[in-house]
Image (cartoon, rainbow, N blue to C red; front, side):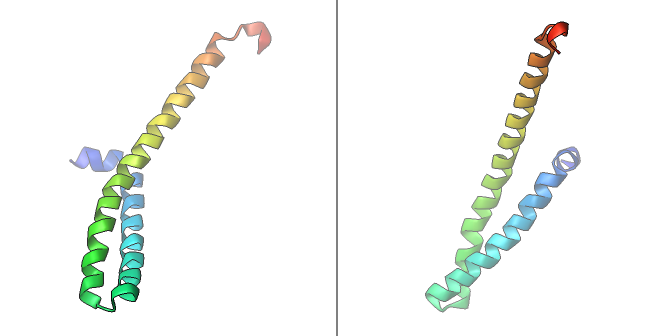
Length: 85
């Protein structure tokens, strides 16, 4: 688990800050709509928690996509004849 955390530290930090921001916004909106602090708190914890997990995997997918694109560019550059460089 420690290796996982170390390998994904930046994404985990971004996910954590996104989670706090999302809960705060959801709580404020929930309170504005319901007028109840407890209902707003309950609503604000469910949806952002699911979103935080989704965000983490979304970031990892984009990271993988960027790595694939970089590998394709590097492979294409290696295939070019020396005269055209």
